[in-house]
Length: 113
Length: 112
Image (tube, rainbow over all chains, first blue to last red; front, side):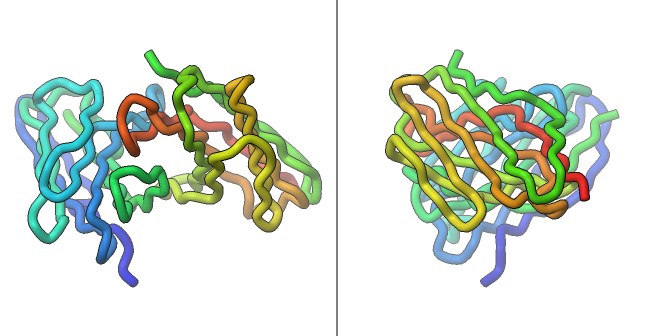
């Protein structure tokens, strides 16, 4: 059974640009969550999608957005990139939105210059 | 601001010893608690979940929960060098279903 797949794995952007990250969940998993991981702040919740609807949102500015498609694949977008957006962005899938038993992808490492 | 607190470590134990990792949380409504392990350069992986007060054992791992004290711990018996990793405590945000609040992790080093 394939795991959670995230693309791209690494990317470098400059301030002001925007970026789109993609996540394909484990087959049969309908919930997708996104987390930002930095050395200083640790893992911070961005948002969760279930059945193409955003169910929960963390405390991030509106520059961070996401969506989920009918096949449960999800994308997140960050607009007007700032240096502080440099981080590892982790996608996690789960069977339902009420479980904390998450399966993480390998992450997308974003560097903003 | 809901918080999950862990000692950052590093916690160093000799091979074969018991490693004890601790976590406290602020949200009294939380009902679900998890331990994730993250090897350097890798993504977190779930190793234990616990929902009721008391102990839950799975192989060499034992999770302990005390909701009255808002305290969760993870014991690793017969520690192995392969257990060297950062251990993340995660607590369900009682105000939003399924959303997890993570601690910053405790780095464990098991010396041969």
